[in-house]
Amino acid sequence: MANPPTASGINKTVPSGTSIPLSQLITYSPGAGSTVVGFDFNQVTSNGGYITDNFGNILSSNNIYGNTTYGIPINELSEYHFIAGPAGTSDTIHFNVDDADTQYSSPAAVAIVTIAAPEPTLSYVSPNPVPESNSEQTIKLYGSNFVSGDSLYFTYPGGSTNNLNPISVVSSTEIDYNYFNDQNGSGSWTVQVKSPDGTLSDAASFQVATATSPYFIVPETSGGITIDLEFVKADQPTASFEADVENAAKMLATAIHNQITVNIIMLHREVVWVVFSQFRSAFCC
Image 1: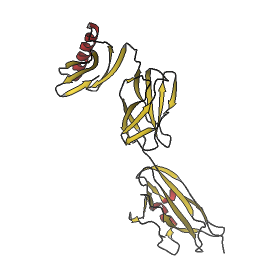
Image 2: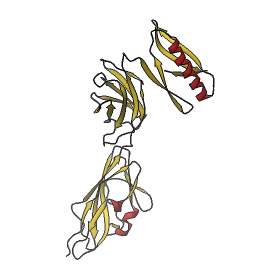
Image 3: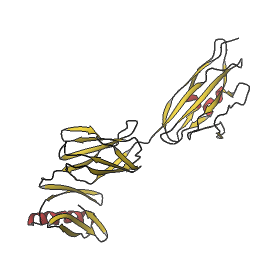
Image 4: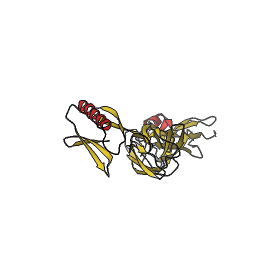
């Protein structure tokens, strides 16, 4: 009698919902003097993925499938598909290959399909600018596809670092991070979200403003136009400060093609907010 066939599985990492022909998950060789004629699978872990037959029917897990003495005909292997489950999961499929002498490969071939998490996207950081401080403070990152196990990667004037403190994945669209910024200084920073598999999001830029800086920069977005407004810090509105605010309001009004109302909000004789408003829509800096 001929030797039995041999088989091995092929591991893949794919996005959720991917349809993979089973022929892409197994390699096999017939034994000497024999021919491979069929295959069967005898176990599929149930983490959300599933197998469909050559008619598109969903097959349940943990069963042996075959429609002839030799299992499923080998020429139909590519007509059976594994459908990938939810992101962040994995499924294991056990195969056997059968030959014309009704011998089968042993041990079973094992293919592991890992479903990749979608890449994180990062839109913006709040607050921006971030005031430089010797005490811990929270910044919030907004985007999409955030998952447990994400980390952060910062660049700052003169260097770069991963997050030094734990982050909190509030939801798939928000990450909160408490961090100390006094060690790395003020200026232009960027941050990226790094997924557990090492995928990095696009970078979002933000400013770290020193407490003694005479200026702070506020990005205002309206009508698809982003304007960086640079204001002089003041204990009270000065002629220079008011001129900067007036010019910024004109730019913003032009951008949205509408009238802008400006309110300067004081607290204990210090300017804390400059509010640009268009009816019920407010743009704050």
